[in-house]
Length: 111
Image (cartoon, rainbow, N blue to C red; front, side):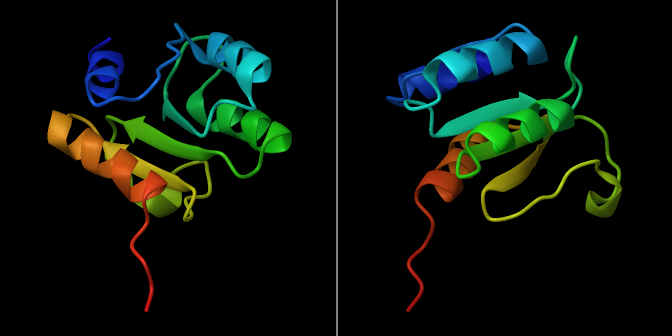
């Protein structure tokens, strides 16, 4: 709920989901409008990495911010992190969330 409120207050149109299956269902219904998803590594009914795999099959170019409270090394995470998929370690501040979203949606220009 806090993530939803934070992003909405910063002008983002937000579609909230209660778990991984709900996120995938809502993504399927609105995939043309969704450019970024915030997923948790651990979610009920479908974990974040599986939800990410399903989403990538439908729309490979969507940006994903994956949140996790665990502290494994990035190599141990069951997903590929790349320029479209970033990791956000919990707990995080509102400014950290906002910066992570900006980093994905507004990458720096390369000279």
